[in-house]
Image (cartoon, helix red, strand yellow):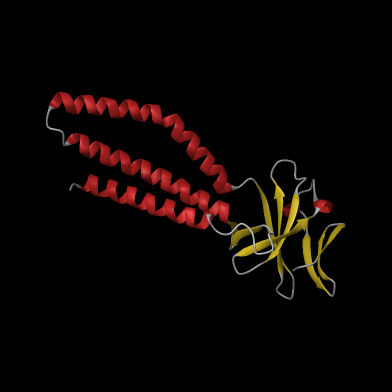
Length: 195
């Protein structure tokens, strides 16, 4: 086995393992026992962003690995006319695959960077909430309360915080009160009942 074949096989194998890992993360439960939406959130990064980056890297690694393997395997063909025919066919197939690969990489990139905002806020007593706002016009704002170490559960909409300026651009504070949590962003306030 040549060095090129070894690197190609290693990159393809790493891409397969990475893609499997992304599907495991993506397969995390989307709802709790009560039927409320649950999202994965780890150290300021959502589960969809984590899987998007893993998928993007596995796509690029798998593509490079496949090219390395293909060129090494085509070079092993002994008959000159067969080697040239297979080489030209592989080049034509690669050229035809580039637009498809570009679209897939673009979709994976948008999944990785995320469309919309996620702001994590913590009260003085350690309770935290996650506020999400859509990336288009900012009219859909949702509040999630801490479910466990890596998950937040949907608490409800926060229409009071919708629009501009965006939640991430406001000076938001989370206060723990006897009635629950109070999220204050500028002049708007929302009462949150964690459950």
